[in-house]
Length: 281
Figure 1 (cartoon, one colour):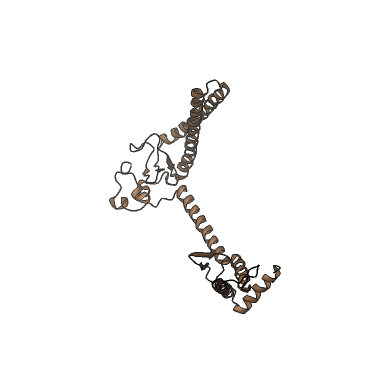
Figure 2 (cartoon, helix red, strand yellow):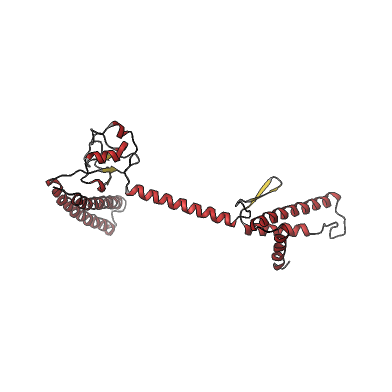
């Protein structure tokens, strides 16, 4: 009587050989395409043609050797067959009891569900749920066929791991952004400049923006041109309004930085002024 361990061992080897078979077939197709390209467009390039002819010959020998191993292992299986399960590699792929189901094609690719080798059919169908092929498993209960699949494949595991990694990277990125943000909440500071909105995303850019606004707010109002001609009242008023607005923005930035670091506004302003002084102004 075939044991579970023996069935899994044979099917594992067979699965590996079938995987090699597909790789070699793909390589043969690629080499044939290249050969036909040179034969059609560059027949004089005999070295390239010979290279691909030789490559195809080598691949066909490799394929023949793989088929020999598959036949040997199939002969062992045919002496005392056991149950198997195969999942079609497609978004809506079904689970089949063999790779010979008439609903599939010679080009259909499968993932061999070796974990189910030599299991009873009821177990396979119960786990396959709605993915169970009704041709391969005609006795599958209707209630089972209406239930989602519980089969865990290497592909599903890889996708789950990739999703978890993406989510972890996203969480790390968000945490970093919040840590570098200019506010306690981790949000940006939005500054309205006329019809434009300026977003300050990081504490570093907030300090730089504070320097710019602080410097402007400290400038004197220019009342005369270089030639001594006086500025208009409108020009002087506009300068005063810009200075006032620059001061308001500097205060807004300072307030948010103070709140983030848990210090008073005055303490934060002193820190910024000290940093500003070190810049050589």
